[in-house]
Image 1 (cartoon, one colour):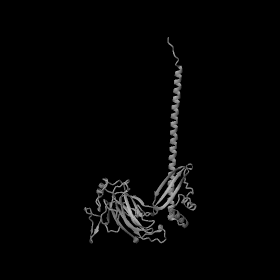
Image 2 (cartoon, one colour):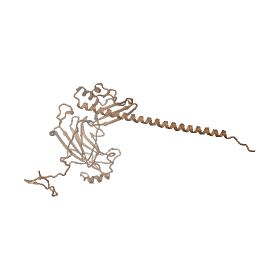
Image 3 (spheres, one colour):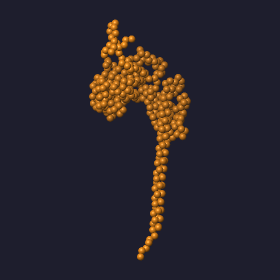
Image 4 (tube, one colour):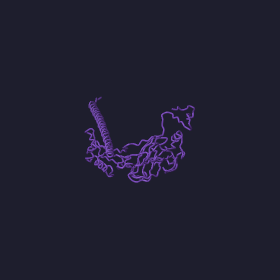
Length: 375
């Protein structure tokens, strides 16, 4: 005799279990989605605060520039003295510049460092340090394009050190250097050596000494006349040996300089040159890369034990804040009038024809029979 069992209870249990399973699954998915939304919202807010803090730090850099310009150009002796005591103090604190009521009022700064921005972000710079002193002068220049470096020192120096060809930015150099020493290759030959990483840029250095005719004691009022200017030139060629050069040698003054790849050094080439000066010396160094662009650094005395530059490349250190997020920027700047010198004695966008007068007649031949037009 067969007995039919009732399965309704089992089916009901399965239905309840299925419903509970889907409820748990939907809850997990919902919670996961909410966590993603909250995380994205937090990341978005963090990005917004980071950008705001960076903007506040940039505002501090600009206010630092204004302070330096005011120090250089103000005719108010009280303001100049106050700025001098702040900018020339190595132990200056973060708030010494904008926290000084009279300086802040003259420069239009907020005593709390607050900058314009969204009120809910509470943007400000919490630390602003401006110093005219820098341990070195850092720059870059294109081929046959000069940079004028003022050798304005905070003390006495007897040498300058020049380093060039950044191994990271300008490309590592394979050792040994294969280009000839004491000679100048053609552009094509240099390009071939450069593509094989067997050379660095050549460097033309010109030391310009001027007579300071300013009697007011303010460097901003210096006046230079051609009669008070002297200069000397040295050409530095990458080589397998050599670490010194001298401006005082007769032309052509060509000095080989050791250039190599080294993991301990940022720059491939380095040379020392005897130049004696102090805080009142009126020296300028004209740096001109040859054949290709390069990065360079100039130090007074030596880069391992430098004498600080004073006013040549001031450093501004600004920390921006937005809510509880901080961002810091450290910038080097160049202020004041820039010295501009021509790169060539003669430059033309067209062909140049030279006419030589050897007697009472003019030779109008340019070597290929075409002739020059005579005015």
